[in-house]
Image (cartoon, rainbow, N blue to C red; front, side, top):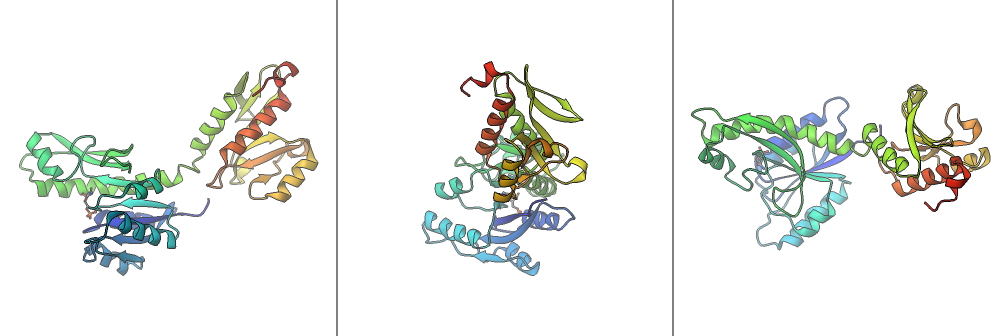
Length: 313
Ligand code: GRF
């Protein structure tokens, strides 16, 4: 398992979602840790809780500070403590375009409705006024459009007779607290989840001419018609904990020099190692997919029948 993701949380008020994220991060095997809680409101109650829990905090009143400059200040703090992902949790400030662009794909928000219904504020009032029978919570990636980024998860919540905005808000919060830690955990592990990695390898391998897939000793393998296997998928082979794709190097000499040059990426695979195959690790959390694609192409070419190997790919 690579290092845990480092989460920064931005709040403006109570911070109950921040607390839900923090306590979830303290469960065994949580894939992230909370390294900073920052606020545009120095009086936000959530800041005191974070501090009591031993989390670094940063607070600065946004009033009178231009938006871009304010966000640069927050971003500098996030950078200082090595934040890898950002969660907005009741953060009531619009973000500058530069900040949103910088954290694209790595910043999430929680909203107390079933988006796309009821964006913005005064959500529970709007739900009751509309007579909705069901509402809920939505976690989504943050993009430049308010409350409109790709949805990562939702929970439905019943509206019950006699609900007021306050009772509804309290019940939706319960749902938020279940949803948000799960969504953040899924997001930060997306780059290392074996199924997601296999999907990418498969897409690259099967894009090559006359490529096919079949199981080899129980694991997906990729072959070229009329030729041989050019790549094998490996996930925790013999409990080695490694997720990788195996491709064909020119021989054991090249294999040895690759491993010497970059031992974090390359390894000598069991069984196929002696015949010059090389393992490319995919569980580093930072995969160079262009490089993987180059290797797959090269291995494909070495395995393809002559008439195909001549094709420009
Ligand atoms: C939550 O309802 C959240 O969905 C919304 O603001 C509220 C924040 O509550 N964006 P808390 O500060 O997390 O308790």
